[in-house]
Picture 1 (tube, rainbow, N blue to C red):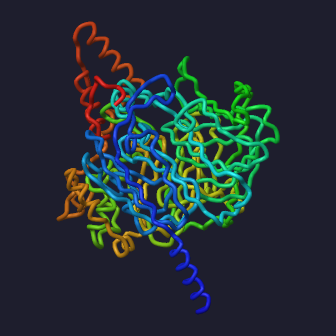
Picture 2: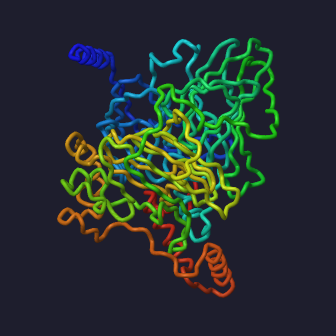
Picture 3: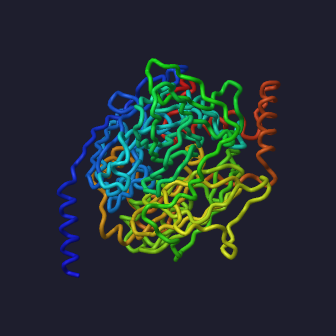
Length: 602
């Protein structure tokens, strides 16, 4: 045993000696771009460029990202999606969860070690900024990957939906507003490959390409295929899987797939590669919307670039059946959380999203900062606030999340700090009036070695069951990764092993300095109370419920009746137009951008 321990120590020391420190200096600023060729608008870029640069490192490297906010008119923050942040929870990045916003003119340093290989991405986790451009791939190379030597080139492909107007403007004027009481999400204007269109993906015959794919969009899942080319799926969300043959994938927002694609032995033809919106996720389809984007596997630069062949149906591989390369049998749960997803209106007439009738509202003090300043009271979920929907988890337990979806839409859910086993996932309900609910007494299909990943979707009016090990002390967000639904509050908080967080982690001084520079509270409970942690007076809460009898349909009728009356006779009733504008200002304040009706693109 001593000999084994010595060998393990020597191996760990050798790994540490080989690891490098990779540093990126990012100035976050505004950049003009026109990725679809139809609309020139302002994006959030890095170092004066858009798209932002990818972050690249090797497994076990230390990554330092030095971020300066030069936007001038709004705060920012970065999240490193899928990176576990073991022992460095303060580097995770979601505002209100593990840090304060970084105000204009301020600086913050993210400093962490990456001990997991694969395809990830980084993006802003504040105020709808990532669909406005602040996102890019994060690639972790691994010389010892199980399919090393089986490909000739390693590359990546991003896919995203794209809006001509900025997310804050759309949120305040089109989405979280009385004129949209049903909560219909804004429809994207275009689809992008590698933040562009009509890309030519250069390939050579008889070669195998490792292609890392990420969906960096705000709303829609996408179907991706390469005409007349099959491929092998070898990784999802940083988890190596047994090579699996496929001809098409279905990739939700925030998911990643890595595939091995082998080219043909001739250069006599170029082949379309296509990403197509899942149009079921959109309330309406505008007549002029082109909901797919085409690029080409380019064998011959001088050849023709044909239009894609029409297909009758989307025949994609179901990721539920993927088998992890490192096989683990289903975990047995020690602690179970059951949540019900619903969308409904509150007393201000706006449509919100809920877990168990709670819509997430960020606290005045980031939840991690409350953990670090609450001593023995850190194990009591009360102090984290009424609308953070916090569960306190023990250390080294198996946690189960059962999610029943009472909404007739698909939702991709992401868990920070972990991957999880997908134990069950139901099909879609046959009708919107019926919800398929998980019944532990009558379990459905459970694979021998469940698929693991960090983002998974639930089907309309269906359910899923996830399990993970609480072996990574920290404050972790669990939320829908449709950016519109996060703005509606579809999130909850997991405070995992708070005593271990206090004992083994620290918040850097530059992170506290960002809080102070922006005038944000950084200690005490969710309301910023440092004297009595159980006194939540002044905490941020969800709006009050609708008056009895009101429905979304009734709100629509009331709003348009008021507007008609206003136009016809100057009548302003119920909320009125002045309250409508107040609602927009409240939304703009929440997402960190001043309301400006004169500028729809910034």
